[in-house]
Length: 144
Image (cartoon, rainbow, N blue to C red):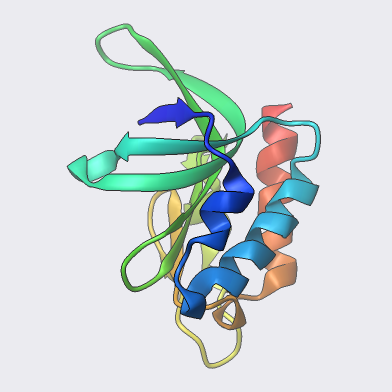
């Protein structure tokens, strides 16, 4: 994945009608939570080798097994084919925040899929937004 200089507002405006409002709502929330941190659009091959476009909020880095240090987003927001994904790159006590706090993110009667460092859902209505904001704030606080 590479950071680009593409206009994020323009990127959001060109999203499909059925997901544009949710993505804009999440972008506004994450922008507020990470105020003062870089906000950039990443494009290219992501984990698993799929082509992605991810809005990155903040930056973090890690050292790979080959000794290279890579820099990428602290929080990422992406529209997939069937769902919205949040990628949280923050770790607390050796555990990704998504794994540690993800179980309580689903709104009543909804499904949210939680992976090691990702959270996926079909709509913002599926997510307890106050818990999602708290998770993003925790990631921000751990990075700073």
